[in-house]
Image (tube, rainbow, N blue to C red):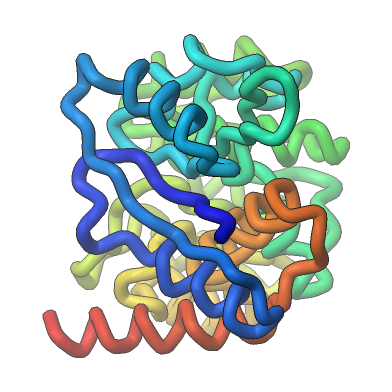
Length: 272
């Protein structure tokens, strides 16, 4: 049996087990996805122990995405982002990858949105860093807006051509933007939005990293403005697809994984 897993804290409500489990079942794989919740000081032995036990790869979630960099050889994008969410044990050394970045670009591509022109990323935390670097690598001019302007400016300083701004500048920034990514938690389990509705327009593609609820206030208002509205389930799906394909070398059954993911999200939302 092939074993893959997730390390983080907490992990009890993770959507990764049903996402990956659906892929194993569809492809007839003798595989299982398990979760680990070590104490912070036990991350190193947890990773080494997983590898020693023959586990093929681990996803990494909060609060370990930065710390896990110490125990792997990150690829270039992951090193620049400064966070790893996928560890691959398939070679002679543990390699680290950030499939959150892939999740952004593949979610946009699925909706026929070319990440070019100008993009505004709201948020300068982990998801914001992944989105900003991913979009910049696609040739997009990135503008980062954050509640604390200094954090946006600091992140922009790491990315060629990027600029940092406060949230009060969003309306002007979005006037001629092509892509908007909400990489904050605003709207998670609440009817809030970080973006003024009057700033949204029909030439905009809006990707909200929030997936609970699956249709956020931001996405409702984006759709009302005629924008392309892309929910956070797509980003979550494609980061899992990228991890699956890296670990197994097989094409992921994307439609099946998407169905399993959305069924679980709707179930979880219905139970709240």
